[in-house]
Length: 81
Image: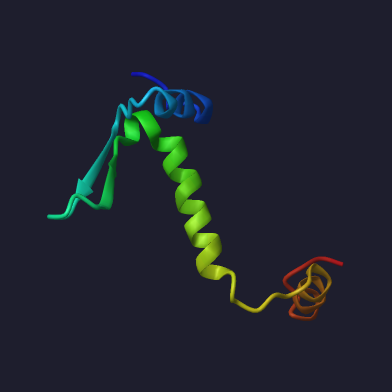
């Protein structure tokens, strides 16, 4: 089984116009509406895309500093001092 393609290998393929393992779904006007990714070839890149989408989704969530998290966990007895 072939390992996931690296990002540089994928970029090289894209520059050559080849998109092995990637297919676009188009609407009636030929506009790209979705993509099908061969996870055997591009599993690692999909993980990067997915992680990026999750980070964007969570961006508006409130932040808590590490210091306050440690303080709270210490108070709750969930973290050794």
